[in-house]
View 1 (cartoon, rainbow, N blue to C red):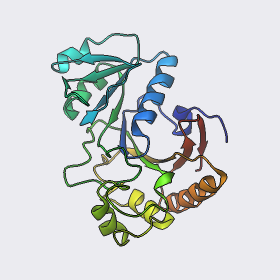
View 2: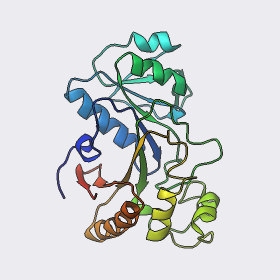
View 3: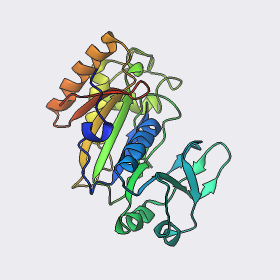
View 4: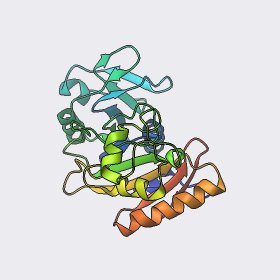
Amino acid sequence: MPQLRLADAIRLDKSDVVALVGGGGKTTALRRLGSECAQRGERVVLTSTTKIEPQRDVRTVFVAGPAGLASLDGPWPVLAVTEDLGIRLRGVPPDWIDALVEGGFRVVAQADGSGRRPFKAPAEHEPVIPRSATLVISVAGIDALGSPLVEEQVHRASRVAQLSGLAIGAPVTEEAIAHVLLHPEAGGKGVPPDARRVVLLNKVETEEEHAAARRIALRIREGGVPVVIASLRRGWIERAG
């Protein structure tokens, strides 16, 4: 599979503010984008508008308000959070991200959680996408395909069932993944009116999974959303359209 940079595959613009939603590799994508942008000499701040796990090899800075964000310095990338919750860290309110953007920082933010599961639909209070976001990346792990639609395998399984028409316990299908990722109350929920969208199908490890991801990508592209297929863990990335 092609060895593209993720920033190139999603066609990241110099002015883009990135929000990541979904499951199956949001934090990995956040870290990769942070590293790639830092290598280009950008002052890149990673954060979450909800919660995020500690990142051992990324410098973490605790901030008390927008003024603290404005004074951030390198080395980059920096993970900006407000509170240590023990297992996880609390990120920053979405309106603080506007202050980072005004300060000339590149911002990459997680905007919801998935409980470590590869596929999800958002709850009523999700996602928390900042108004300043210009690029929203909907992430899904291909390993959800064929899994039973139960909460142990799919985050908010009942909501996925409602949106996709699948029965609880039924195998997750290619059609269901594409449908949920395109749905205005799922993959498209909360996206600012002028923001672009990209779908990232991650965890593609085998030829069979790659073929399935290509079929899902075709359905999503027919809905007008570009798709990137990847195994971020292994470092190979392909733009499917």
